[in-house]
Amino acid sequence: MVSDKTTTAKVKVKKETAPKVAIKVSKDSAEAPDRFKMRVRVSAYEHKILDASVRQIMDTAGRYDAVVEGPIPLPTGIKKYTVNRSSFIDKNAREQFEMRIHRRLIDIINPSQKVIESLTNLSLPSGVNVDVKMM
Image (cartoon, rainbow, N blue to C red; front, side, top):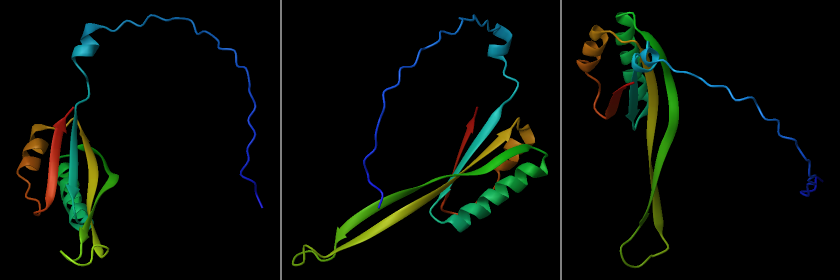
């Protein structure tokens, strides 16, 4: 049987000071980034519809030779609700429901105008929420 007791020891560590280095940032590199990124967040309640719409977005971006990173699965949001089963007598009888929100992330690097236009004209199934952000 393994005991839950753990032992700790105090150790003294000398902190070494790193030499200070001055970094100069030129105005040209700060004002004009050489990479633009279009971040597309897609969310839905059903994962099958979500995967189909993500595949449709990827095919549309690939048709115009865009560099695509993803789809990256994001954590599934779960909303739980507890409701009384009856309105008057049985206070202890309850039902529990949950809604799962599935999310995916797609990054399109240096999108051309044709890619942006084709993605805005894309028709996706109902229940799919698409958020587009230019970075």
